[in-house]
Length: 455
Image (cartoon, rainbow, N blue to C red):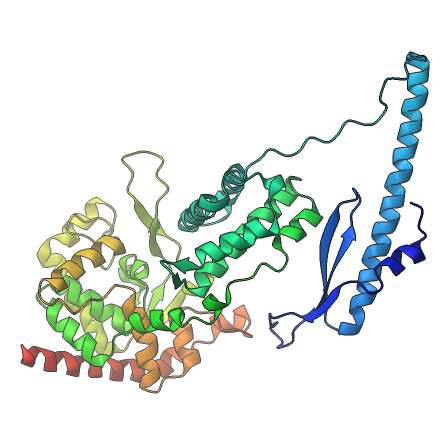
């Protein structure tokens, strides 16, 4: 290296662009960034982004990075010179007259691993660290990403490849996709690229060049798709009354919807609910399980099993007024009359609140599909999924005056800024929500009775 450290730093004195990050941190502030190009250890031009809380610290951080790089280059050049000298002396001793022998070290072979292969290797280690349903979701994401980049070699990936893939998944038939789904794909692919760096298929600089400043298209950010989705998942009191009147002929459908509406449970949590966790005396239900996908080891094993709920916050108490336990009473009587309770013991499901007509676990997909077929036979306009009552629970309780924080606790959402210990031990929300849940159910019941009279 012919340049001194001072001369090397002066080369970059006026280089780089300074800007403020578009992402806002939890404390409400935004970082300052400086982006610049530099020559890496191998002489290749690379792009670097450095961030800092204070704009005045950016250039100092850039100079520190360049200083460290400068001395690293010097160290490598010195080591290379020593190695070349050692090889020259060894060659003179073994083949003193052969000037045609090249003493340069062999070139490093490029990595031949494709994105498809890298993702599959990543999933092998990822599978044991998460729930099986989460793993299956990751497999679905892998298929989407590999549809665009699967055959591309990891070592040949560029920023443009990543950005073009994000642009492609951001639109479905020309319509902006939900922001959350695009953000999830971007985050998951970055995680796989970090895995490639850990496997030494990418250098840190290459990883930074591929992922830095990849952005979700503005049309997706500004889209009201998320709001439209929320509206599609909501049914008001009158709509719920109409739907209940349509399914009243099938008491399993009717009671399932009534219970989901007054508890806010996820369908999987309801179908895994144990009778001993229904506490009438203390007016609450304890949620500790959910029906989840089963990783089948043998063909005869079932597709679902009783597993853990979605996350730690999902293990919770849900308030329920004493008056509304009548839905569970009717459900249990129906279980006995239909023979389902007797059949449930054959499969070890005798302690579950509800099972299929064969006594096996119920899956939300098949149950919901059959229920909607039943509804469509009576009305071409009405429809509901088993996940909608949970959204209605949150919105309708808010409309009758319940506190947002109490509702969030009831549905198992962890509140920001509240420690886990405090969150678990503070059960005042269970008492506070009871009158609002009762009022909500009464208003649903009133609309249900009106719909029955209109038939």
